[in-house]
Image (cartoon, rainbow over all chains, first blue to last red; front, side, top):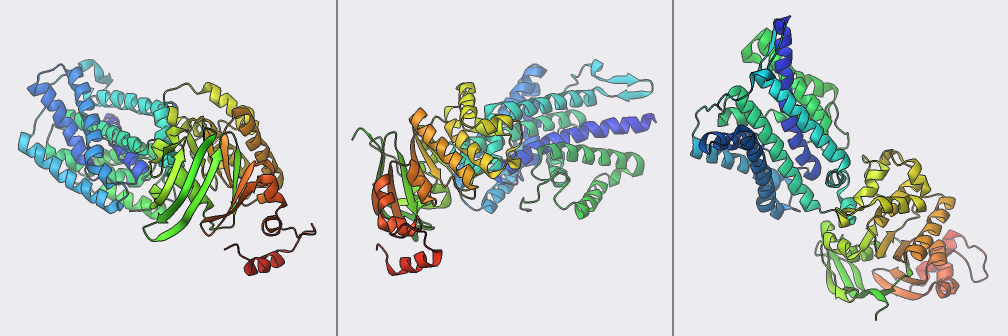
Length: 292
Length: 266
């Protein structure tokens, strides 16, 4: 029983992370119909930013965390501003290919600066975050993941539901022409969605770095998990991304716990294929949306 | 010159560099007036509005010739973001709500040109003009009826404090009673807010009832203009758009159509 709960909690918190990072991916897709193939690299960059602030600059943990997130946010804006804005109005496939190039570029840059070694953050999480219920023990990392994830989810929920800028972003995703006719700054919305996407990706990267250590190949591979997650949840559903993430996370953990660790990357995709056979638009996707 | 809000001088519009839709349109709109733009399908009415509001660009259209003056300043080929901030708001044809946003969120998108300014009072103003929206303010726009949606998109535009409102076929596909109500409110907005309105319509009879001045378009050109009352009395207009013969009795559609084929203005 304790093994089961352990796996459940681990799967939930990893899945939560997948979901959050997929949320960024979905936001970009919703606002501009672009599939961002550089998502895994954004994840890795977040982790390395944090690493740089913590180990090179030796800043306090919390400050490093916030600075790393701010840097990711800025990076998102810069990417949109310099690389994507000139392509507005061009066929989408150009933009998507550009994100493929971007992925290679970021990966190369990280390898150049840090090399392909595995780095670890200094152990900083307070032991109090771990929970011990009888024989069930939840390590501090997972406690921290659940807390950070929930905080982000609530913050973004409030932002999209109540703030004007959040409502403008949803309006662009809903009907771009009408948004344009009302003077919504569509380009600003694109920039903002890239910024937020980079921010949540970076955040997921940092937490995954705490769990597994920081390595550019591992992190960018995990970034690719957004594809099963968002296809499962429906490419255009933010709630679906979260739930899809949790499902994939649970599947992975249960597979490696009860079947075999070597199957952990296979079984989620098998289930994905089955679900898509029954629900071709994902669990929460909209039918009209064009599939890629 | 002071009373002139909007002036189009010999404006030509070309889509995708090859299809010329407007062939030298000139018209002027005075402050605080309702000006109606009539014409059959494909005459270029919607394109004229889009040329003013800047929405041609995303559709690969361009003003290739002529000038559009707003308060004496050239605005042709500016971006929609800039033009809306001059106070020109277009209400698109075919009611384009944000389906997955609630009524009130839809209205809040109308504040985009005044981001960060208080909007509570504007919401109340919109609910004052359209009480039906108040009752449904928490519901998703996707579930509203056609009449409610028309009110919604007009209310959304009002949230932006427009000086010039470009309405594209507000009566499209609505029941006659609803159309009457919509036109009454358009008139009311014009009188109470002092908003200048350009009204594109197929429903010429209703449009000329509330408009001060009218233009008739055909094949991308203005073919006739005049005070709304004069246009109403004009035998050609009566024949083509109001479906009335000179004697005043209603003519059948086929008769009007064959007459039309024989007699063109151009």
